[in-house]
Image 1 (cartoon, one colour):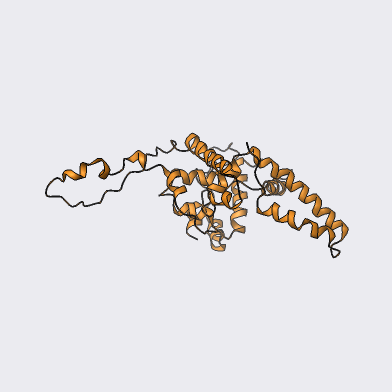
Image 2 (image 1 turned 45 degrees about the horizontal axis):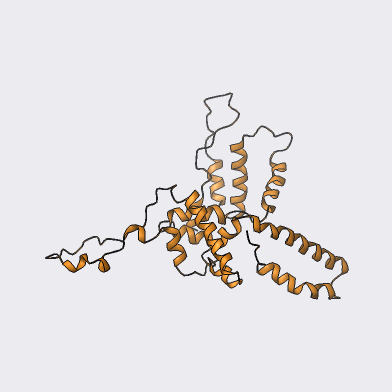
Length: 261
């Protein structure tokens, strides 16, 4: 696979690195730390060449699509390779998962009945395009203009009816964490949630408590909700030997809640 040119952030750091090294206002320790951080950044950026996620995520961002690579002066062959990667992933993992059919021409709800058949409508040059000639969701998405949006997940959610299959692909790739920082923080918080004297919580209960904490930080949990739940009667467990109560399926699905905010 061809190497990727530098994205905007590393390229900007490279052009300003000399100024930082010679700027006397920065302490020598700070300048050394910045150089080490830049070295680490370059190390991990080089791994982009071995992953398809970088290219797929950029193309599925409605503000960038293929324009990002053209603006970054990628050679045409590299842009074509990025497009082929997205097409391969879409055809292999998504296109046939939801029973997507080729998009067809919309028919009017109440067509006007013609008095007689027009023989010229049967001419090959005047026939409507066949369903297979209109392309699939990915073709329609790439053929549309880019759109300025800061909420990429909200953009896809608002168009899941137009792109039901590509919507799933977009969520899968655009929700991948850019770093492992959040994951490491989750493990750190687990130490306080599951201490040595509280080690019999089930996986469902642990997940529910972690979700509750995060939703509270996001403002999704209101005080009146907590008061209402606290006043509910205790749940009777039929199996007295059960270690925990199994949470119902979909209890942690808050996509609809976020869309209404």
